[in-house]
Image 1 (cartoon, rainbow, N blue to C red):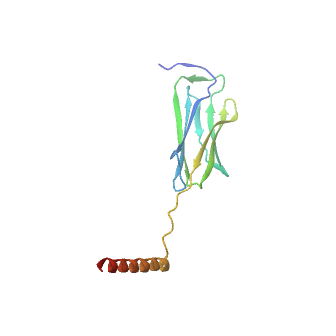
Image 2 (cartoon, rainbow, N blue to C red):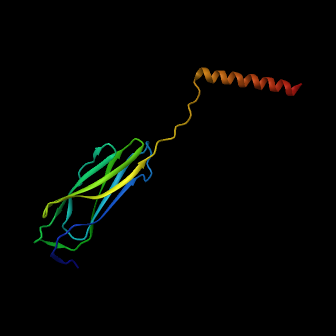
Image 3 (cartoon, rainbow, N blue to C red):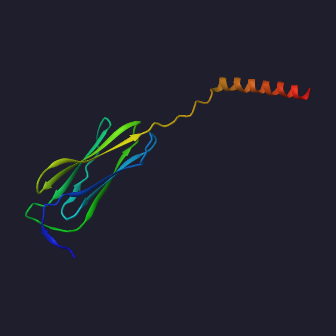
Length: 153
C-alpha cells in the first residue's frame, strides 16, 4: 500500500562504481551512479555530463524535489546512469558527484567523491630490429655448427 504525506524528500543513498575496478591505460573506463530515494518525488531530471579538470572528473546531477507543502508517495526507487569516460592516462583520479535541486528548495552540494587509480600498461621489451636480429641469428648458427662438429669428433 502506498501512503502519501507532506515531506521534505532528499537523496537517501548514493552509490558510485568505477568499471573496471582496477583500470589500466588500455581500458575503456565507465562510472555507474545510482541515487536512492525513499519517496517519489524526488527524481533525477538530468544526470549531466562529465566535466574534466586535470585528474578530477565531476558531474552535476539535477534532482527535482517537491515543495515543502507537496504530497509525496512513500516509494523507494533508484535513478541510475552510466558515464562513458573512455581511456585515461595512468594516474590517480577523483570522481565527484554534485547534486543540484530544483522546484522545491534550490540547493547545490557535493554528494559523494570516489577515488581510483589507472595503472600503466606493462610494455614488452622491444624485439631486435632486422640487422640486430640477423647478427644474433648468424652468431647462434655459428655456435650451433661449431658445437655439432665438436660433439662428432
